[in-house]
Length: 88
Ligand SMILES: [Zn+2]
Image 1: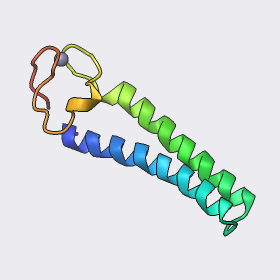
Image 2: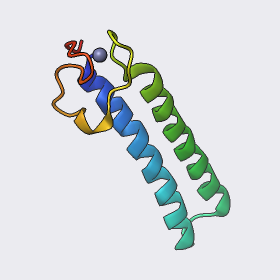
Image 3: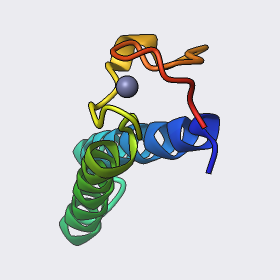
Image 4: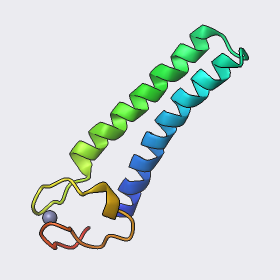
């Protein structure tokens, strides 16, 4: 798996989860959906956020020095900011 692909998976999981929770609560407040559906959307959102956290912890690491990459330099990053090792 390439680093760009990992970035996208993390990005989709984290924003998807946040959007799911936000949308669930937002739509519920406008009374368009039932409480059950709102809760389901929040739970799914939480699972996606948790999955993105696990993904970050397990996969977004340098294979050389095993440190988690800092979030701010992900985009356009070509080598590890800690040890200088080039990414896969
Ligand atoms: Zn490194």
